Image (tube, rainbow, N blue to C red; front, side, top):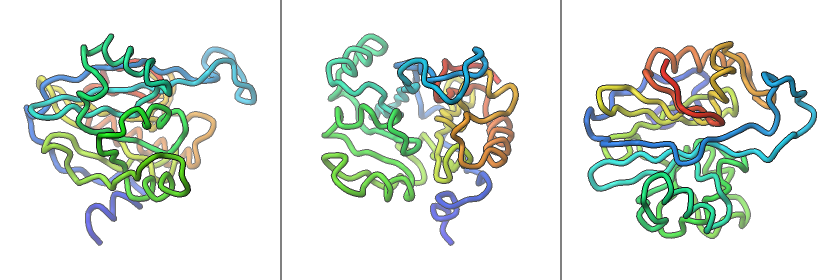
Length: 224
């Protein structure tokens, strides 16, 4: 079994190899996500109280600008958020990475038709069915731009992937919905729609050992 196959179907978080230190020059949160319902705010899980938005992250280094989980469906809105937080235009992005197949994490994907779209093998298989998007998602390489490492982080979904990298001496994990918000992280709890909450808790414990900073799927980043 290859390492990619192990990651794609791993029942437990695979031990990742170290990404190149110093290869990422900067990173920033483009949109700060929110949940449609949040039990930490006293809201029940059987009703949506607001539109959901996922956290979108930009990871940049020499020769690349990688955007994770583009969250804004309208091209004007996505362009505005990207420029507001980075000064970049849509065409300045080099590639897209999708953590998992849920609609809020692929909402703005079609705004980047010129760039390759990367994700795990299982997520690509799901999202490439039918004609949902104008082109196919590609299976991620083991290391993106010699700097950013995709890692299997199952629990929220079985095929969920996160990204980890180093920047300014810190280890950063862009966790997607492997971590919903800081509140969920502190209690090692999963959002109500997780397919395997017990695995999700084990995944969070594993992330804690490899990160100094975590970017959750529906919140701002925080220090571990």
